[in-house]
Length: 315
Image: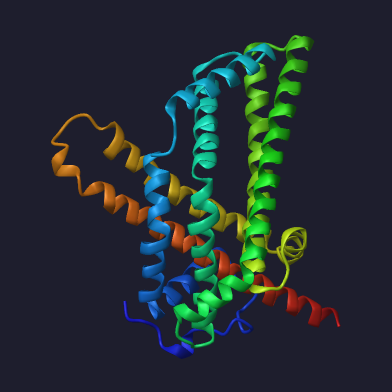
């Protein structure tokens, strides 16, 4: 595939607003092929170290994960939810994600935030037909660092609050169903439906939060203002954002599952012949994260164009 001509790369204020997720992906690939060196450097130098730690769980204490899983199972069991394999696996997965996120938090709020800002800056450089200058980016980063870190910390608090609210509501609902006299299968079915509804709500929240990070880099606002601005921009484009989120989540989950199978769990065959698979899968995972960051940035410009067009039509 040949790199696209500079005329095929739209300026940030010329993005066609009525785009779907496939068109945003295609535009992302065009931007990547237009300036591959910069984006590959960002993925290798900034995202790969975080991906390696995240996939291998180097900072996670498994004893804490087991203790957290047992605690969650006891709480849910006392509320009336049966301790079936599905519930046990869900609790274990939730505990692993929670402990891994807390252990990797220093990397998330440093390297990952820097990589996010670098991607936004690189995409804008591509639209403006300018070269990525590391010294200029460093100066910009010092200016916007307080904005992006404050927005990120608010996002973390918001997500933790959503998860805590979900756990409280889950316990209350299961306890109420148990007291009323619902059967075990009925309780499990209702809990699964409740969980799916919450996942849709959480996905929408994560889309708004992700867009607010791009806004905090691009615009001179942060924290609550960035979240409100994100919520306004995403109006009318929610379905596109959900498709982008689902696609990225599936890609990351697939690579992570492959890593756990090939690197962690596989017991047969020659382990030494598979040493190369670890760095390859880390690079693949980093590439998926990079594409996700780029699509979020392109999605921001698309939402911005859509909002400007809506204002012009209203006038």
